[in-house]
Length: 187
Image (cartoon, rainbow, N blue to C red):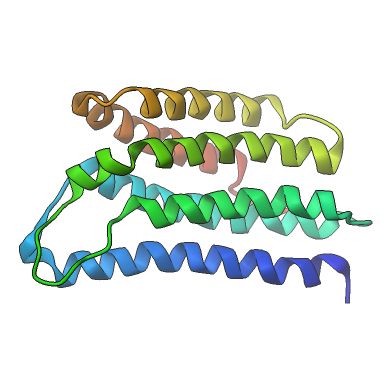
């Protein structure tokens, strides 16, 4: 068995758990729908995280070409996946029985840890490329990471609802363009 096949098992489990967090949140939304106050940025971020998780899994295919894995290299990839999992765990609330759930309140309560995890994940993604390949990501890829890092820092610092209600849909469109332009084909 090659090293990546062995290492990818743990990465796949973490990504599967990340997706499970979102899907359990959607299930909770459906079951508690009469008690839920919806908030568009929360819903958009949850959908965006499903795309980001799928994209992380999709791009991990290229890691199969990497040989001579070190523990530091594996930790660089693992860190990225752990941070993604944490974001997926933060984006939607737990659903206590017979109590109202306000997605806007949850969003602003978890805003700082969520955007801190996003900023750290973006940083870890660039670091992962450096650690594995000894270079920075391509210009387009690096530009995307820079733009999303600015968004993450602003999301962390700015609490104003209007900001998040405008920037979140723009971020979702940017992510769709990013995936479509840079990762449409495997390999």
